[in-house]
Amino acid sequence: MKIYFLGISGTFMGNLAQIAKAQGHEVIGCDNKVYPPMSDELNSSGINFFQGYEEKNFVEADIYVIGNAISKENTILKEILRLKKKIISGPEWLYENILQNKKVIAVSGTHGKTTVTSMIAHSLVDNNFDPNYLIAGIPKKLDKSWNISEDEIFVIEADEYDTCFFDKRPKFFHYSPTILLVNNIEFDHADIYENIEMIEDNFFELIKTMHSNSRVLVNEHRVSERFKNNLVTYKFETKLQFLSIDASNIHEENKLLAAYAIEEFLPKDKVLSSLEDYKGVKRRFETIFENENFKLIDDFAHHPTAIDETIKMATEQTDNLILIIELGSNSMKKGIHDERLLNIFKNQNVYTINASANQRKIFANHAQELTKADVAKICTTEAKKKTILMCGNRNFQGFQKLILDELIK
Image: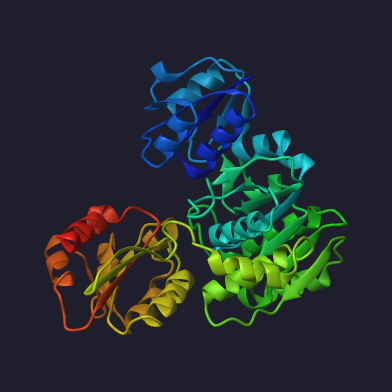
């Protein structure tokens, strides 16, 4: 079958394209821009792709997999619809072709999905399993971000973001999980949700659809009383378990959650032992430069809770910390989390990137918008080793490269 992936450069869609190729399909795709590492991965898989959503990049195919970033105004999509071609969303394609025959371990939550999913995959591989998995990041020890095998287990991130232009439900409705881990639920994705209750209700509806021999594991200290009460009140067919996690930091908490998620396949002590050798995922508290004077850490944290937990880990290592926060997500840009950010900033040496004019006023006494002139100041050697922690889910508008170049000099 010839499959065309529209929006192929995203981590999810790019990995799906590679999975389809591994299954023997002819795969082609298009995106506005395709950057490394995804461009390298697609090329190494023998997948041809176009750059630019122009009509000339339309190609005849048997089916078109539509990414959730593709709007109805997309030129190629308009051509696909005009010709009445068969379309499908990425999550639906994945379920129809692979997941429906697997035991799906779905890792959900506002944050921590990529880390916990990769921890589970790492532990299984380390204990001689050959699990199927799909990770929305680049794990440092696993060979790649996805794996397809004959094993019954499939580990996947259960994303609460919408599926595509014609299916506005969260992606996780398509996965039919056997085990659902609810790590945390907080308000995020302000572009599609009005409040946290809307997000919680989607989780609630997902759990209602799960079959009787499935399991739901809830990190009870990371969800609201409203959500817990709804779960307790409703008579679910599935087995429901609240987890009380006692951990010194978010990294140790994630390890324990990974162990609980696969306890029917591996004893907890074996999982935790395997995770002693866990190397992490790129952009998750990743040290990208270090010498005797500086340490530069890159982290994907883009929500106040994740930022706060990341700071805790950094301050365990240093008392000379510079924090750089990119306000890149829709929720951040809309100012939804300004009050919580302000409380975090009060005790830190902070620079922001992409703050609005109003946010600059709000943060004025505790943070300043990063400029090129600040880079030299930040990279000035002090008597005590300096740690620079950069948190955000975009590209820091090029500032990370500027800082890295200055430190290397």
